[in-house]
Length: 298
Image 1: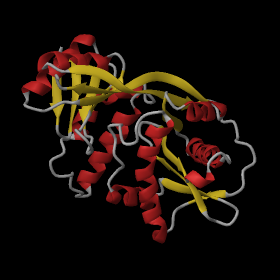
Image 2: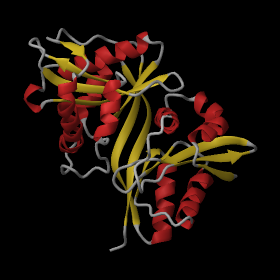
Image 3: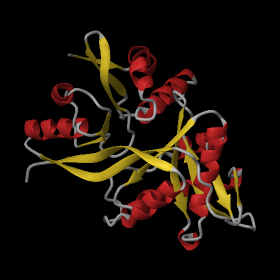
């Protein structure tokens, strides 16, 4: 088993692309990030100063058998792991720490992310625990949401600040809705410049009520390996429980399918409302994942 690190996302995809393509829905986070970073580098868009950016493939018998990356630009820069041999996940922990990198959180597929964090905890004297249980869903047969007032449209230039504020609110509200203290999750909203780029690329929409007033925002990733990921989905607190979020997700999902891509999304398993809504729309569970933290010794 060899762990091969890459600073260049295109070189990483050259090596791991066939492996990722075998399960493109499971691989959605890694493929969308790798392709986005490659596009941004080609366009001369700088990476946030101080944030790590690397990818790794676990090579077994000359082929990729698992992948991970460290590209998060928020918090303590959590890693993201996809399924890999148990020994590779543990070795990755040893190698990353040996590179002098600090590790206090990681996200991704079980059991790889748990094995990785347990090894980090063993080597640093800390304790690993699951912070958030997540679940990846793929759309099967889309079931239309019930009749809901309004329609989907792109944000206007003078509405960019509203999108940015709602993306920020989504993170805190998601904690509260799942019964956690606000701000306790390891995620921050994307930086404003990234949100503005997504708006300009046509990957963020509003659901508006009958008077064209924005009541919900929903995003979707650029398709990668034939898969587009819906999210985040945020409804204004005063406009909740009216079906706007369901209508928005259904409309965006329909666009994704019409483009020839497969639609998927993540849910927080502690939020029964969102899990129920998405399943009613035809989304089916694919795999359970987790966001984990490694807490220092007391």
